[in-house]
Image (cartoon, rainbow, N blue to C red; front, top):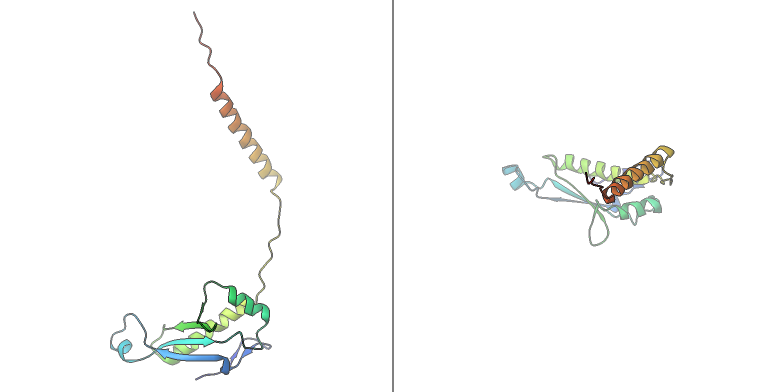
Length: 145
C-alpha cells in the first residue's frame, strides 16, 4: 500500500523516499495485539527528496519533538487503530501535517518599547517602595514630659 504523498502542487514525496514497517503494538488489546502486527513505523528520507524546499528541511531538522533514526530519516509511528491500513493512512496524515506546518514561515518578533502607562506605573511603584524604606530609617522622637 505504498504510495506517493501529495502535499501541494509543488511538493510530492515519491514512494521511494518512504519506508513502511509493521511491528507489534504495545499496550492492552488482548489476543489481537499478541498475534497481529498493526503498529506502523513510517520512515521518510526527506533529506533526499528534491521537491521539499531546503528551508522546510531545515525547520524539520530543528524540531525537537520529532524522532529521527541513525540515518537521519524522520520516523513516525501509528498504533491508534486495529488495522494496518488505517494506521498506514494515519501515519501518512501525520507526515503531511509535519511538512505543511514546516512550510509556514515563523513570524519574526518586532521589538517594542514599554507603553507610557506601564512606564508610569513602574516609576510610581519605585517611588512608593523607596518611601516605605525611607520611613523605616527615620528615628522616632520620644517626648520627655
